[in-house]
Image (cartoon, rainbow, N blue to C red; front, top):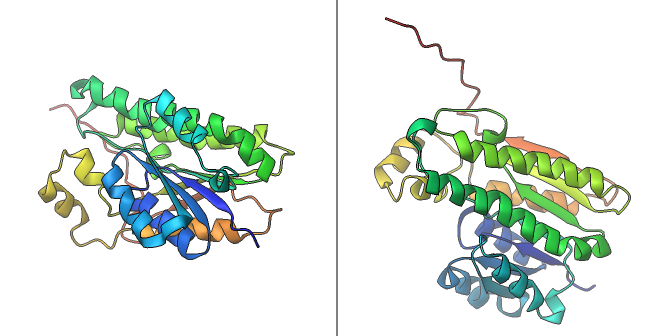
Length: 250
């Protein structure tokens, strides 16, 4: 049987790297993308011709389109798109936030995601494939400092539902995966490499791992073609819903 092909963004670390590895071990071909070419090469070294790597920035429309146009014939038929690339920057409240960081999150988490998805949709329709968008519980539950990051993930969740509606009748399935606290490089990126902040966040907690999310993606790929999972919201047991907070005047 001919191997199926997955296109995984943000495959340099964290969820994306784990998802790519799980798919490859399951016999898939994988187009692995990310900004850092040196982080993609180990996948090629480990899995050989089953991997095609493409280094580009999700904010660069021309680079996205060029990478897709340059896909080798054996990787051109896309059965699965995993929109994983994204980031959070900063923890300041909105009134003190860095506007450049807001724009980078919007350009990466929203604009880049829709640009890539739009380019690959004809191939996914042809394959009657699967789109998995990595969102976040931040899409559904606000928290101080989450501002634009949460807004971008709310877009991803709603965009997933919109895709599902528009793709009605094509056989293409769409799922939004919405993880809670997960221990990857996420917090280091958000805090500009503050290792102490990352360690403090996860201290005493058993967080979600990248492999946990990769296993969810694998489960989706193994479902019968007539089933669609609209959303998967996952938290570690140590995490639950915060109560409302009230500010009282002195």
